[in-house]
Image (cartoon, rainbow over the protein chains, first blue to last red):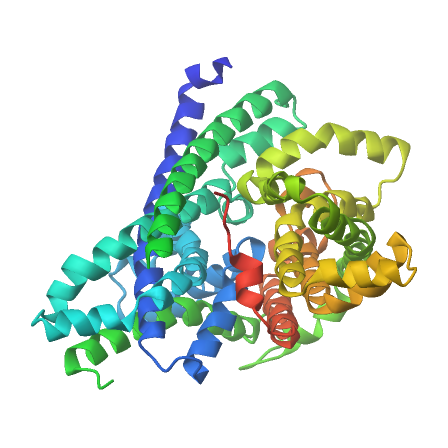
Amino acid sequence: MGVFNSPVARHAFANSLEISARTAIVGAILGGLFAWAIVTGKPGGVFYKISVALSSVLAQFGGVMLTFAFLATFGFNGLVSTLALKFLPNTFLADSTWLYGMTGLSVLYTFFQIPLMVLVFLPTLENLKPQWREASDALGGRAYEYWLRIGIPILTPSFAGAALLLFVNSFSAYATANTLINLSDFLTPLEIATALTSETGGSNPAEAKSLSLYMVVVVVIVMGLYAMLRRKVSKWEQKR
Amino acid sequence: MKQSLGVRLWRWTIIFVVALYLLVPLYAMFDFSTKPFGFADKGRTFRAWTMIASQPDLIPAISRSLITAAIVMALILFLIVPTAIWVHLKLPALRRPFELLCLLPLAIPAIVIVVGIAPLYRWISINLSESPITLAGVYSMLILPYTYRSLSAALDAVDIHTLAEAATTLGATITRVIFGIIMPTIKTGIVNGSFIAIALVLGEYTISNILNFKTFQVVIAQIGRTNGNVAVAVSLASLLFVIFLLLIIPTKKRQGAVLDVDIA
């Protein structure tokens, strides 16, 4: 259990937590807004169907293929970096080194977080009753007042719950990071993999096991919070 | 309801930004895979696409993945489906624990599962077989959350108790009730589960990479180290294949069944 005395392990763990928190928040906001854009459209229309179908595919699109997609976009000789080299040569887009660090990894993770958020959050938004909006309007409430006093308070528990799911989702992710950044001590999952497989004498199953235990502890805490939030949500859903 | 200008403006801005985020990388894959590489090419070329078939390891990996998916489907059909029916029919008290058990693989990080299962697979590859097809065992566990969800939804939709009672009064054995009466009525749920099995087996990387098995994703990553254009072409092709699979799934409640993650 002493692995956490090593600064390397602590750093990787902090990185893991940071990237999960960051991509969960950004993914939840962008995905939540996109889910709102979907429900404000025609229910059951073409846009609705395409968005939902595409989301359910892209939410699972982590890993090797996602890395290649972003290398083809922002990597050396990629679509955007080539264009940037031509038109915006002094911006960060022209130099693809940013892709191989925390920023790049966050951008990749957010790619599969957004669709997951859409899938998880869409049912909640569809449950918002139009009558509430009508009541607020009839009583003279303005649009921002509706969102501030009714919409956001009602949605907050499910939004937070969904964000927690996203957190666990990127906390567990390994494939994307492994194919993009081949540094064994960057994130805890990468560190576990190295401890488990290294053939150059660094193999240390005990270390892999204790690091895994720490990951499980984080997941259990987050899932416990999620269960509490769910209870709140289902209480509210019964009251409707 | 007529939408105000502000709402419409917001809506289209959001749609534009998110669509740009999600679609540009996909288009970039196509762009990259048709880029000229080597000296022989001038302008756009589909050479990367035609080279897919001649990649070493790739075709065997795909066929092995399909065999693995078939085994996973067989395990679902003959082990998980009867168990789910049995629990729903005879052991209602076990429903909640069974459900929680099935959802565990979703909560536990794949990398942690590997740590736990690595000694077992070391034993398997020494004593039984070194083939990646043995991964069917751990895959059928990974897929539990998804299959259980779609099965449970399908089982709740029909009145299986009445069906089972009617069949039993007419002299059917319990095997016949499960395989002959109830299974046909939840066909959609089973088919959904099978499609997810294929998508999961084709997309899995973490476990097979760490356990040193050459599965589809591992081979793609390996191709990427020597020829980026071909690797991008293969990735795009398999993504399109998965989209195609999901589109032909019978759509009743697909989204809810696949991703209604509820671990409360």
